[in-house]
Length: 234
Image (cartoon, rainbow, N blue to C red; front, side, top):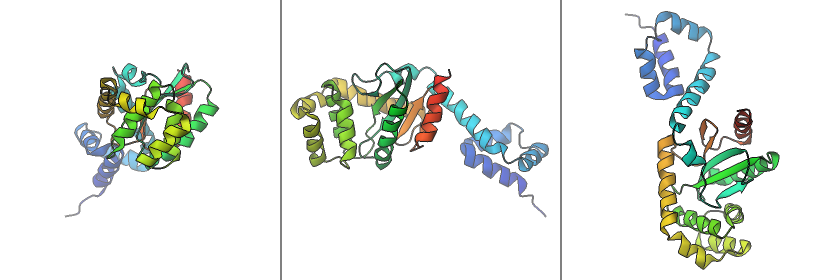
């Protein structure tokens, strides 16, 4: 008996684009009929457009009802223009190498977009990075968040030595920051960020939210700039 591979190819493509749940919906919805398969095979250029549309739709669903909580910063934990008309939210971890690689890209975006406000959500998912995240919020309490944020990423993975060096470089009262890092306000903020990341379906850092888009990974400055431009147009 001869078995056609076309349904398997289409299902595999949809699985890659949308995950196995999306492939299941594809089959159940009736989109897997012979004519649709033939059309999609004849027009493979539509698949990236489908993927983009699907991802946008899913982002809008996840952001519905929680966008205000996402864009409201912990006091002082903001980069760029604190009164900017466009807000980029970054979920970050100081132990994340991809976050470190993205840091200069965010800096360049701030320079290129004077109306850009970057809200940083501390999301310590690597072992031991919760301490540095809490201290960064302690730096925010002293009005030194941006300076400490940049200093930490410039000195490599978090450690006692890099924390001490960063604190000294930016003039941070480390003892006061450590005391504030143990406060209920800091604990509540970190728990909030974990919850928001979970609601958005994020699995790692860096992750981003801008306008009605949620993006995951080191997507690059060009992708983020396109998202900024799209947010400006709305």
